Length: 309
Image (cartoon, rainbow, N blue to C red; front, side, top):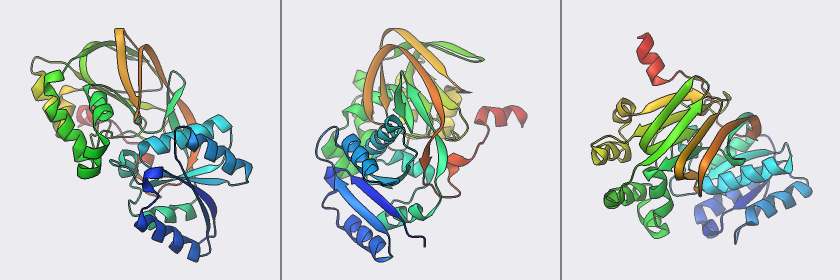
């Protein structure tokens, strides 16, 4: 195994994780240098990344959930550094890690440091980056309002339970969507704009997205008469059911506007705006991934497969 020098930025909630401590020690015993820094409050990830770069580290590890991964990616992009990044998934859902098939066991995830990093795309919404997915509508509200205690007890299933318990709050949003060779407008229940494939604890809104194709996968779930039934299909993870009711596209950029602010969740970070432009920073980040990661496979959309069948 190749020797490596890296710095792990660890979410403060994982400071007492014994399995992680054992994995770090085992990795070091193999002759690898791995420093650890722990976050305490907002802004720590960016500060620790900059300090690591100043200290000469060329490989950084994001130890936490999708939000921690986004924060590190954002800091690296802002720094202009070509340092590489690895993901040590320690969150509730770990949606990006699941889709990329990054091992969930801490030591196994660390072994990806021995692989060469690959250049991957980063999505942007009004200049704000996201590595995995932007979600809107009821789905993003579920993600934003699921309690930390419920996530701790139930893991990814907490998102489903929260969604089922909030059906009485179901409201459709209205939006106009414009992209090259694509236009749609109307009321929608859920929206996924994927650089990655899933969010909200395993909801595969963009099941064939790739992070190295320079494109974003779009999934819009329109608001039909049976709104509750449609959203139930979405929250239960029924991929085939979602595909029958959703509008899909794959585009280099997308503009969205509406009469009211639309709530958007970028890898766990909530935003709201009446006008949004989504685009792709082509291969802007170097990431340590499994050689056969599904996110590196450029596959056709399901609808394209159906049309050519």
